[in-house]
Length: 337
Image 1 (cartoon, rainbow, N blue to C red):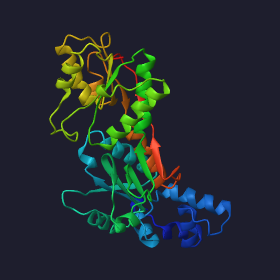
Image 2: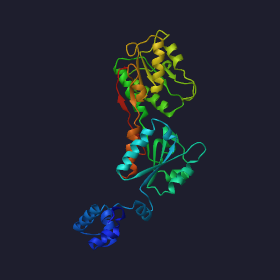
Image 3: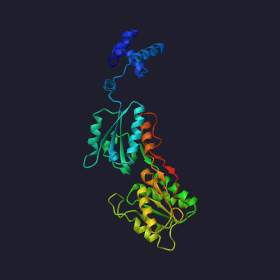
Image 4: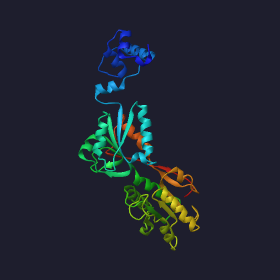
């Protein structure tokens, strides 16, 4: 018998049982009663014959397919955020589930992306973004989305997974303080939620250590909201900060790209890292952080962990721990502090 053509009817006929009994044994339907011996014989024969379940037919009967849908707000175009999708897809495959991604943005409404996924009868739909943000979903989308990844709903009615930005900033700042640094400049990311939360964590660590934050050392990395198009202010800030008598002894950077600019600016002023000034950052963009001289101490974004955690939730293994679950960064110590 061709292995590709083995059906439930074939197995039932060989063993003299009903198709319903075979389906219950192979598909885990506990409502169909049978002896353990019968279940074992069915499974053994199915394996021997090379039975492959018809997931499409099974999904049609149940009204859902073995699919998880993702509405991606720019996610698949960003090198960091693709780590979410890679970890998520790998975990889903282990559960026999496929991931279908559709994009929104650029004038395409979220409802259209969700409707496109719903035609495929997915088990669940998630909404993911390329950077940490608060998203206002329309009511129809809010009813359809089961989980938000790297973002949260304005009303916090949908379970969300977000990076623990504030705690990450507190951790890296505590490390700078523990290394003996007391005048820490922070060249932060203006206009972004990540920058706002990291600024709060920076202040938390100072308060816990009984230190006052010198607000003159807290500067925006760019003019206007941080983006690849915004004009950088890093060289200007470094020139001003190190042209004064009370210069900083450390610089915390909003991300590794800002740190790359800081390295160049410090070298222009003949300042050595970490002897003259320590430098630390966020992201762990390895092609930057590991290749700088000296290599950069930074906080690694938890995108892979978010992807794996999202897979656990959407595959039904675990429920969200709370309405907004913060996923911790990973501290990566190198030689810049």
